[in-house]
Length: 487
Ligand code: SF4
Image (cartoon, rainbow, N blue to C red; front, side):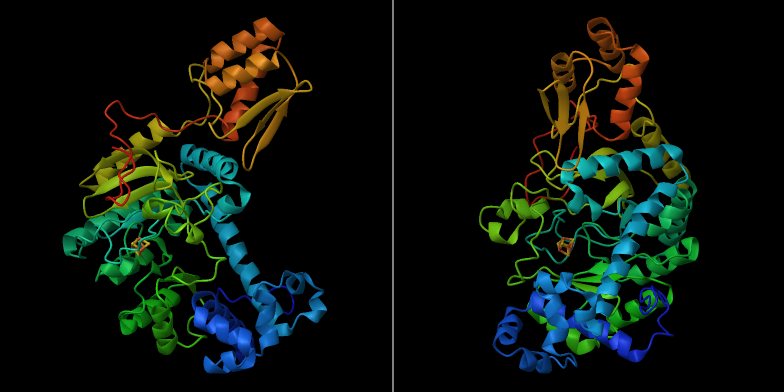
């Protein structure tokens, strides 16, 4: 029991009354159908009770209407909202709490350099992407691709997955390297490594041995990675076995990306609403309700003009990246250090690539990870570091105050030669030490005070840490081409 009259549904549900599960599962199913299927929305508008009957829903229209855009009803007095709607709302809150726990969990990373770096990237993302988008990013510590490319080929793929090439079978040799890889990463990351997942620009079910990797992950780390697939409808018996495997190993939430109405119909035929209580069906299909716009990142950028009504507006931030840490491809044994950013011509995939390398053994991986951390994850600003605010931070000086504002952050400063400080910070004209000396000379601000202040800007993620382009960096990745953001 959670919060008095509400039950937790993400854990063991064996003690939850059937009518409670039915209310939540059918509210979820009805809303998913409504979001995905325009024909159902039209039927619902004409005769809501008949539309619900047509999908076998035991609910009345009043029980789902609070979630169909009538904000007043959602915000109304709880006593006026039907019990089933309150149960569903509690379920939504539980999922939001789960996401917040994942974000907080990452801060317990064993390596203190990585923990500080991750915390800084979370703050940067808050400023760069804005609070609402950045709150949805869990900043998982690692993701593993178990194939090269993806068979699905979605036009909107936010990470521009290349065409499917081949997979990484679970042979004895690969299984040994897999266990070794997890051991090395567990030693560096610790507890939060359990929040890693086994896909990126890949569909996990493209790998016929995905379930073996999942099981080995659970055996090594005691937690089952979350699965997201766009082909769960193709072989429903395999999907059923996978969901049972994942649920039996404590997976809390899994996801189906719905790329066609027919795929949702197939899924609904194969699984009851109750069986999919923990599986979110995410509307990605043509004709999905307008509230579900796709990020203008990856391959979608190629279609920004043609299909702008399906993408988030240009002035909003866009990324689907959710890892601040290590992105593996096990086929070519590569690893990249990445963190989310607003998708741009330079970073069309919506994440920075700070470093990359390859490995053949656990020992090589251990050395590679240590090198990447030492090189890229400073915990303090050094005297020689150039200090420049991020390019998305706008600086003004007015009424004796310097104001630095971005989508999700702002700061004010009211001491010293502010016009000069603003110029130094926006143009990156000086190192930390040079700026501190300059302020002492020009405005009498003690050197240690400026250094401490600059370090606080660094900790807040306000200073520009975007990786410099290597001398040989080619033009930005051609959109729609195989995904690699930097050479
Ligand atoms: S969105 Fe997912 S399923 Fe679609 S192409 Fe990209 S990786 Fe594949």
